[in-house]
Image 1 (tube, rainbow, N blue to C red):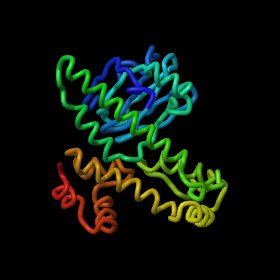
Image 2 (cartoon, rainbow, N blue to C red):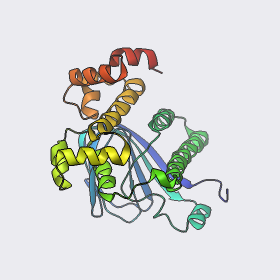
Image 3 (cartoon, helix red, strand yellow):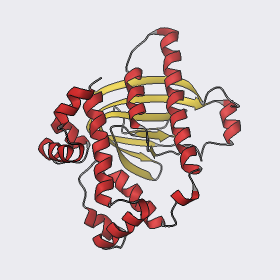
Length: 265
C-alpha cells in the first residue's frame, strides 16, 4: 500500500443529544464528517440536501457551505481532517472516493463498534492517536466497500438506471414513513410495475428491501444503545414500538426485548 493512512485528524468532538446547532450554516477550512449516532438532522451542502439519521455519515468538503438543522435530539461525532499527501497523490483527487453528501455504510455493525470506541474519552496524545486511528479505520471501511462495488462481478450489475435510482430513493426514505405508491408515481410507474421491475433488479420486492433496511438498523440500536423501543421505532421509520415489535417478531422469530437481552454488549 503506497500510503500509511488516509487522513490527518485535525479535531474530533462528540456531541450528546444536542437540541440545536449554534449556527445554522458554516464553512470549514478542512474536510468535515458528521457521523450520526442518534437522532436526525437536515443538511444542505452546496445544492445537495437531505436528512441523515442514526448510522449515517454526512461529509462536507472544505470551502463549501454546510447548512444544518436538528430534527430530533442529535448525538454525533464531529471530525475535522485533511487527506494525507500520499493518499491524495495515489487517488489523484478525492471526488471518486467520497463526495460531499450523505455516505451509505454497508457494514453497520463495524460502524457501531467504531462509535462505541470513539465515545471513550482518553486525554492527551494517546487519546488523539487513538481517535486518528479510528477515523482512518472508518475511512478504510468506506474505501473497501467502494472497491467491492467497483469490482463486483459483471453479472451482479444491472442495466436498469431507473431501479438503481429507486434503490437510492428507498435508502434515503426508509427511516421515515413514506408511501411506496408515491415513489412509484415519482418514477412514473404503477405500484405493480415497480414491484415486478425491482424484484427482477435485485431479487426481492421493494417492501422487503425497505423492511430489511429498517430491521438492520433496529437490531443495531437494540444492541448498541439503551433507547426505548418507541424511540427505536421512530429512528427506523415505524409509527410506534408496537408495530415495530410485530414486524420484528414476524421476521426474526423473536421479540425486540428478547433480542436485546440475548445480544446486548
